[in-house]
Length: 384
Image (cartoon, rainbow, N blue to C red; front, side, top):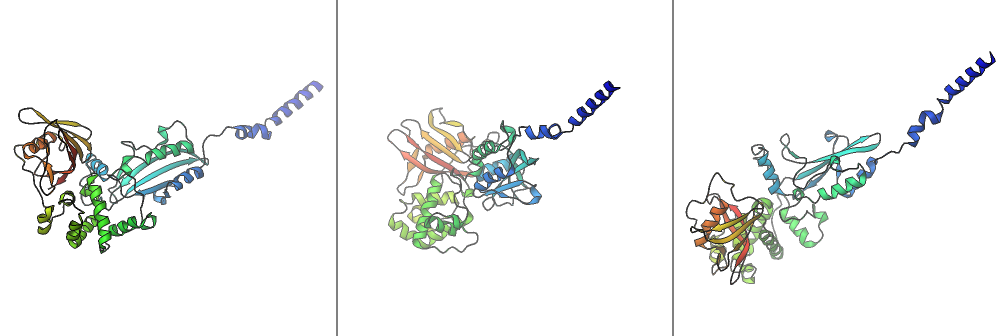
């Protein structure tokens, strides 16, 4: 009987030991927990100008608005996804690209994240999750922690989707953010529905800035409507003064800018060299079966009717082309008013090689250098 009693007591003690605090909670106390809290991610997002969105976008969703942004890439995406009709009345110049980041939290720790770019009218928005240098997803990194998120975010913020056509991220989103008086004046000019009333000095700065952006390859679609209206107002008010001051070299600058922006010159401007100098395009230059206007990144060899090489053209952007002539081929012609164009004996071959429909688009040379042996430069296409 004594032996049984000892055995029973031992069994009772053993069962008690199973319910000690150490046994019941030891695994939770000593477990090595991986991951970071949401607060660490919020610090990173706040430092990069992200804000928390409304509950309709999810509990832990953050966004940042980009304006300007890469209109060319977005328009191409709209076309490729077959959403042209949905966006036919959407003003891309006034719109903004929203960068959304969605974070999932479990047991107080972040377990995953993903993002999207969004733009467009309500009910018809275009959303892009990844593409062409833009990726922000925890599936793409090996470790789920705040440091990995920060590294991936810094790369995503440098993508071309969030940049203007000139290739720089917007530094000033409001007048308050402007770093100097010149930028402040420019912001005032661009203010939506703001009456344009600039001084001569303000107009001079605006014209120089607009011309610089045109020469860098910016197209009409990428400018704000108010920026173009500012050019018209300034030129109607101070053209003769600027012309006497030498702001425009024999009309070349104003002609290039006017053609790029689609502004109709006045008779006086035409007389002073700002008029149009339409190319004489001959022969059949357009094939509906080929890519219109060339393919970005491709190199094109331009030849005449005899198969003789006359120039090399490379499409370096959505609407930007670099060119150079063959040795000893006078490809570019500058008239006495400074207007730059391709020589009439060669221009039709360039249109044909790039498959440009001359009834819809025309070439505008934005920059050209003539040497004794070779001509080099840059041009864009404008709608006619």
